[in-house]
Image 1: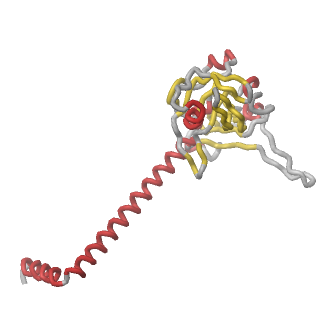
Image 2: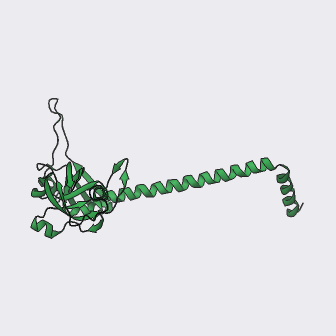
Image 3: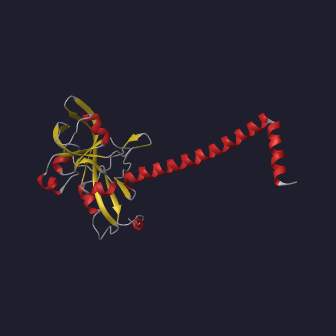
Length: 235
């Protein structure tokens, strides 16, 4: 029996059982389509998660104060600016490349007739490098801002939309806890993670004068990065 005869016989069998042939082909198409969809969806989710962690700082380590139970009372652990500075000691922590102390608090923020309660964070210049903040408009903090002790702020993408809508916020003034801050930059959107919005924040400098708008000197956490990925564990 030649190949052509096999082909003709197969075609006749398909033609004589049209419904069964159609359902068989349909099942194959659905099965292959489902596999392709699941593989594509899995790869897309993997890339999305990778992007989220990259935006959070792929090589970042978060250090928080510990708490201990004392006679039935659980006191709040604290970190200080001095603790964060101690982590930059190369003789004690040689694998730490940069440290950024972080203050944070939910504070009422006002622009015009817009009033929002937003997460206000205070940190140093190093936080941009450690957590990979990318500026969409304007500028990040500079050495001049530190030298002049300027009251300036950086807005997250969502915070800028909530307060300013379609208005360009650069050069505008917001009141954070009753204190005026000039907006010098906005960050690119970072997306959300597990129901949280990573773009709803305002960042100010962590100098004592600016940080007084947030807290009474307590550092919520310190964020550090190792000098290389290979030295991450030792850091």
